[in-house]
Amino acid sequence: MKEKKESSFSRLMGFAEIYKSFTYISLVLSAVSSVLALFPFYYIWKIIKEVLDVMPNFQNATGIVKNGVFAVIFALLSMLIYIAALLCSHTSAFRVQANMRKQMMHKIVTLPLGEIEKIGSGKLRKTVNDCSSATETYLAHQLPDMVGSIVTPIGLLMFLLAFDWHFGLISLIPIVLSFVVMMVFMTGKTLQTKMEEYQNALDDMSNEAVEYVRGIPVVKAFGQSVFSFRKFKKSIDSYSEWAIDYTQNLRVPMAILTMLINGIFAFIIFGGLIFVRGGVTNELILNNVSFTAKQGEITALVGPSGGGKTTVSRLAARFWDATSGNITVGGMNISNVEPETLLSLYSIVFQDVTLFNTSVAENIRLGKKGATDEEVLVAAKLANCDEFVQKLANGYDTEIGENGCNLSGGERQRISIARAFLKNVPIILLDEATASLDVENETLIQTALSKLIENKTVIVIAHRMRTVENADKIVVLSDGKIAECDTPDKLIQKDSIFKHMTELQTASQNWTI
Image (cartoon, rainbow, N blue to C red; front, side):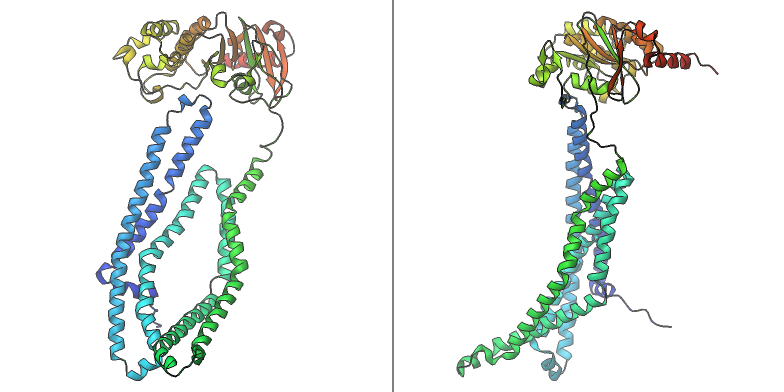
């Protein structure tokens, strides 16, 4: 039976003796450090996403500090674990280097003088000093870094696959092509031959250099020039020719490899354009939308999902700027008004309520900076908050948890409405706040909203047609255009989208098992 050949790495570990376990520990720690180093980017992504989601109401970005702290913690952990990996790898590498030099010197001492002359003092010096130092560098630095360089792209792929498997698969293309380029042009028998030529050229040059240095006194004594040592010059020329030839042969493969690695982002963008399948276009989201929301009236925006209702409300508050056309408030073009000044005219009550991990009173006080306790109490009573707040342990001083996690959905909505009461501004933007609530909470919130919108300009996004039966105007949006615009009574008498939606919802409400 053919005996299995021992690998070079196993032979190196033999020199490490009892310290070889430190090498394996360093590899594991390096891999762990590489994985942890990816998490700060995840938390930075969460910060950016939250800021974009809440803009321009940046005060609603409640997770920035927490995510920032986690990013710093993971970055520090990654750095500390990497330092521990290097400590372990150096402990083993120094022992390998020392033992290699001891054994080589023992071997050299036992060699016949003729064999030593044949090898050459330059090659012996290079083997003892340079090669052992290169081994130490490989074990102490290159090997842990190599593990990290393998784990990092794998970890990135896992992140991409977790976020979107389409992008994950697309990003595999340049990586696979990179490995193909490396396997074809930069590994195998050809590279092995080239590396042998490289080592031989270095050995020859080292031998001839030592001989030249030792012969300098003779050169000077007999008035000779450097060209008396033709073998030294020949070894330098030989190494130069090898280096130039090797570099020229790798120019194209290296250019392709670099392009593929750096081009991964281009592949992701290209893949995104493929997989969205027309989802990203330059078409207008809203087209020729024009209506007037009068003071003291309720204007309801209804229509199928994706019709443009939310876009209209966001444009009205200048969360985005319109690319064409004008939006005016009291005759002023809102694009000429500072966002903060404009928002001071609006109270916004949406389904997704954002609350802070502070007291009930402070959450309501966000509606008006510097509001007194009496003003907060009046707003809370108008929003039907007082009843449930009085039942809390510390009343209005009770901490409600992150995003109001200690409250029910209806209670959170009523605090949001209390803010709007406290702000007391002329324009109300309302995303129907009762769509997902039970009957009791819905009644309480509808009562509060009825008080809130008195004598105000109200734009409401309606999901249930029965809640806007008393609206002054219904604007039906479909495919980014106004399909219908009239009073509820007139629309219900026509063969309209509004009538069809009302009938469907009535049928679903009357459905029984």
